[in-house]
Length: 333
Image (cartoon, rainbow, N blue to C red):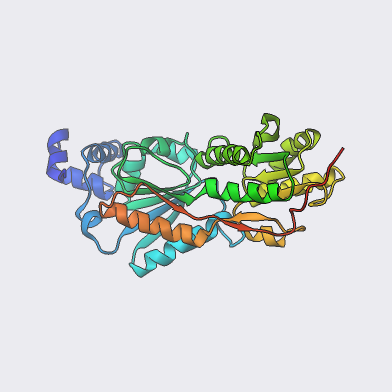
């Protein structure tokens, strides 16, 4: 473990200057402070407080995800994490991020400068700068629905997409559907890739060949349905599996715009079981992710990583919730 003296020797500067750089003192230049921080990260430095404090200081970074009220996907995940953290007297900060913030400062440098012992990242995509940097980080880090290979300091928490999608496809097939479409989320997301493969696997498991013209990537918002649902309907889809409840709500709206009924003409399935799923008309059949438990699991995983328990993946079981948006197949001309 590198010391302040080691950093000073490497840079050829005084120990006091290194200390000022690490502690955010105002009487050294920004350039020198950044050099000290970058060198400290390169040498694997961690402050004594970060290594030994019982009151951990950790951060939840959130991007591309709403989280400010109970209707939104990230809200209960953060609540679950904070509930577990409170029992251990951890200090949890929630920091919204964007691509600009990530280009201005390296992930490890930001963590060291702010004294964070670890972090939980929500809503990030594989091409984000910080996600790319996680391949070499030494900071204990947990990702939701993203995975970094060969780094024992990084873990992944999520819900079993393979099981969840298979439950939905099994339900639709039991109702007689064979022309099943998939309206997925963002293409630059690991969980979208997982759900695509899970859908293909489940269709083949049920003796059905997935059709390229009935599978599309969109975004995790209702509005993406207007770009893809018309094509699904033209190609004879009698059911649409959606990668989120928000997408499903948009799909139902788009089906109705085309003069069809849900579920009489087209069945729709969502994913997540957000409050909108039970409140929408018709209520949405969906795959439930227990978001409180996702947050609690992220805490357990991060706590383990901080204490050198190198867990790779932690997956929760999915649960099928049947409501009013699915029904027996109706042959359509």
